Length: 363
Image (cartoon, rainbow, N blue to C red; front, side, top):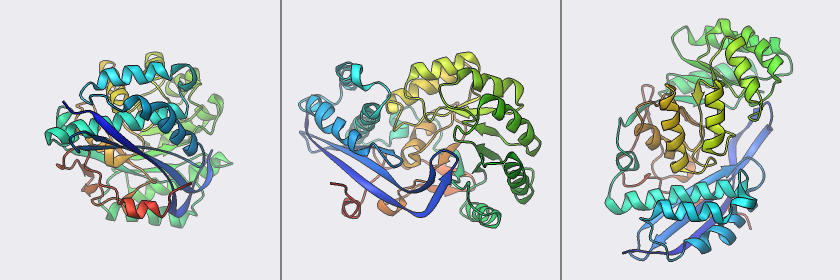
């Protein structure tokens, strides 16, 4: 029987190739990437990670080093459910929903990776194996791009193999959003799925007005029109705005998703495995969505999440996120004719270039 023998935690400040922007975070020049490597007594390794925009990376690292890793050492990784249960309740009082949930997500991902690697299976097969070809879209973080740059980015996405695109909305004047979405729809034509992301910019009244103004351009969904806590606002946008709503990247538990889904406030639940509690919680959310007849989409960490959606019959689109790690991964995600292809390498198959990451390590 193997035991978790040691763990290594890393924190890296990753510069983006270009400054990106959305309606709530403003200009984004970097993100913080937090990793945990679990090594068992047989020498097998599992890698997990999470990330944050701008701040709290240090708090996540501290949660891993002080609160989680000491409770992992000596544990049997095959007793994954028992480990999660103990970690969750050991840290529950001060940890629900904040940096510690992101840290727990990274540990959960590492445990799944370790277990799948030990049996020599790619994660998507380990989780049940539905279809390795996952529909995907390119997620632009482009609110402040001039229109010509926005359309040029769309052309580059299409040339790279994408057949669906998301753009940011939530500019100071709704008329600006309308004209930009109109131009994008005309540029793409009627058959390319177009998603819109407001990043929690509006009140419910503003979001309903915006949804009605943007509906003529046939977006597949309007993402995060209001703050995640406003369940009633999500419901109003769905009922009164005339657009499907995608939401969930800022929800941190299965219970939060249950409340939003039961209320009828979301058409495309959108968990992020790196912040909702890991793969365990992501799959629970997806199965809950399936019970309500809803397709699940995703946020962030596409090199990992392609495996999760490849294991699910009710998957919709994988987001290929703007915070990519291609520069630090041996074999980045493969995209072909609108599909992301889940790899056959054991575990999640993400092999980080630790030497390259080390150049961006934070003290």
